[in-house]
Image 1 (tube, rainbow, N blue to C red):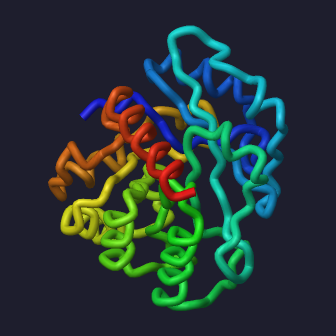
Image 2 (cartoon, rainbow, N blue to C red):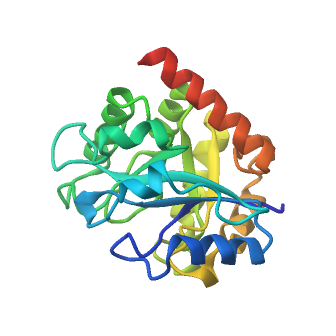
Length: 240
């Protein structure tokens, strides 16, 4: 499987990134990617979201598509997320991940319910990032069924596997839940450096061993990615 669209990357505008957006896009093109989503963290996690990126920065390098987005964070309580509303119309993709903005030390039921409530309250959420986290455990079958119903993609994150941040058994359980539910899936690098861009080898090995159908992967090609994002855009218009 040769995936050339990466829907989860970070730049220096995230507190954890080290390269500019231009450097990331340029490196992605050099590696043969066809599109890259720049999804810096929202402000609750120290991310900086300059308005010029959203309303003025347009496909700066020929031959590779720039998709604009944010990796959102939940507020400490409730369903609120940290996206300035004026930026939403400019975003191609909005993904939500559980980070240290929510209480720690809770059980699977708590974090699962937080995500389900956020998906229901915020129709602009297109995907859930790295749900296979020891710090914020979730009920994979329950989340996958909810994602299927909402048309939201669950992420299979290469970084989690590459850096052994979670045991492979957890990732395999997530993959199997995605297979059983038939929910949309996005396979991403979660790149914070140029050398991580486009490297999906670790997660793809598990995906192939578990037998996830390729048609479930929304970013399996540029065409499938744009078709999925177009469906998401139409859904948001209908629900807002």
